[in-house]
Image (cartoon, rainbow, N blue to C red; front, side, top):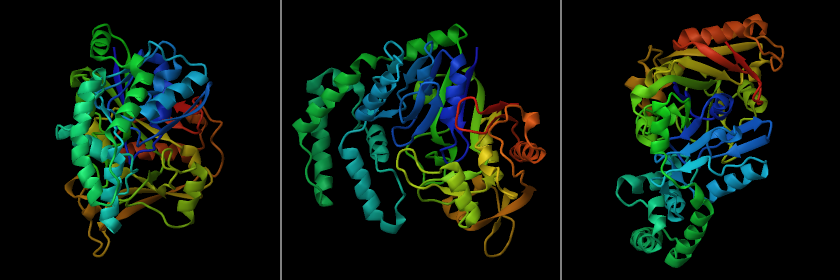
Length: 426
């Protein structure tokens, strides 16, 4: 029996979805345990191309149950749209999709509250997706959340919604926004709930039975470790726990069951939104990475910030998550570069003094440092056709081995294209 967790080792967008899609063919359960529809992943397989935000990536494997755990917050409209898209591709989710009734629901006031905070911050804005993640998680921990459980009794739901609107409408009025109507929201959300009701059932028993019968379980983290609310570059982070340890609370799997943690990292670094990024490039190399990697957000369409691989940060996230393996993705994006750099540490931007490790500082500290690089020779030839590590150019092999050496984790997978089969197993 194995419980494998796939986590992002950078700031998200590492192609975790591709790795989960690849590994899901051996899993009987694929589960999400955190986040919401503020982060997306693209999966390319024999059924087509799928841009998803909530549905676990095991959807294309007919023997696989797909579980959305209580640590996930749900936008009901997004989930229904994804179910329809998957059904239109000829994939039946009936009996295979489990959505925990403990999931909190994103309500119409959550994005409005988040937008108001972002506007009030001005130049200090966090750079959120404005999909309401912060406010819905804030309501969750302040005992103001609305869960799928509440939808089973419309009268209870109406009472809880009325309380929240008394609070939220006062806030919205104070920032010049119109009141939200109770009956309109109630009817809209009940109609959306009816569309997904058949999938709402608690998965705890399913998962415990699988654990006791040595069934393969694959867990999928949303976003990247450096966006974790505790360990990321706060306040430029997300609202949920994005690291492997979040699976215990977000899904109900005790830590002792986890046997493998795969950290997914791009062969370079990207980030969306505000916040420090030591290796960010503002030159032709940065634009070349963005163009070759098609670096634009799945959810927002925003151009991603691009830079060299930061081994100091990935070494930290590997330790934080207990990574047993790394999956290095988008190696092919580096194919045309004559020289490639790797960040091995930091120096103070003004004094040149060698700096502490990331975990000793905060986002403000990270903004004061400059990366220390080593340079490696590029291979300047295509790699998208390669399926064996020994067939990669010698310089590409050296680059992968150097990443493993600097991060302290073996690289077990190398991705050289968007398709499922564009994977080299090492």
